[in-house]
Image 1: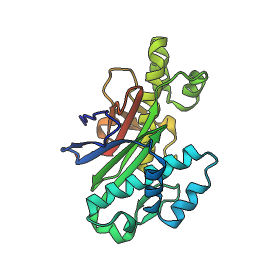
Image 2 (image 1 turned 60 degrees about the vertical axis):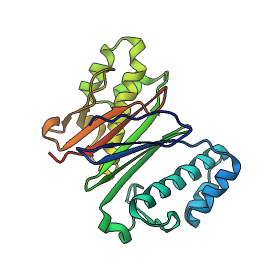
Image 3 (image 1 turned 180 degrees about the vertical axis):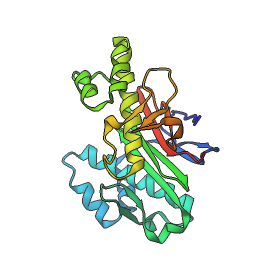
Image 4 (image 1 turned 120 degrees about the horizontal axis):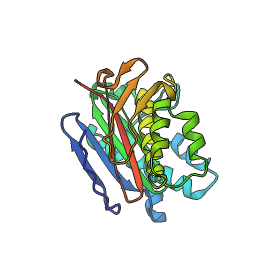
Length: 239
């Protein structure tokens, strides 16, 4: 995919990738108290109960604003009120629209890190999105050795040390987006598929178990939703 996402987080930023019919929205979750209260009013009782379970008010506020914005974005695409959106959840917690909206064939996925949230929408094929702040992690090398595939870990270790944080999160977001698109947990262990990760290298699935990436039926895209962040989208390839 070739996504262009603008980054002025004070406003909603939207882009559409026409060949795959994927809409991407990036927004800021920082909100004044009155805006958080207004967002909470759009949620279901179950969602408000979930918000109250967060240990920190900051996390509750982010959840409330992110979920309210998701409702607004879905409602705009379905032509209904935000309060009428209903969700169901897969065995591994991935939210989907309830059977009431099955006829729309609308798929979505959400990721947020700190006060940045990214939403992906598609008609007709499943998608996954992941977003992370690029930063130095003291045990990144150990995590890569444990969770990356052999091919990915070899590439990661060849990177210049200054490029490793971005390489690490390129790999992590791409793998996480792919797993989220599958929606059934780690049905494919993380070391059973390969993705590109080197800074400047296009995002791509290289292998899924014994199938070459070009024949796997999956596409990857990576983009910068805001300064210091990286995001990835995995979607079924219509061929």
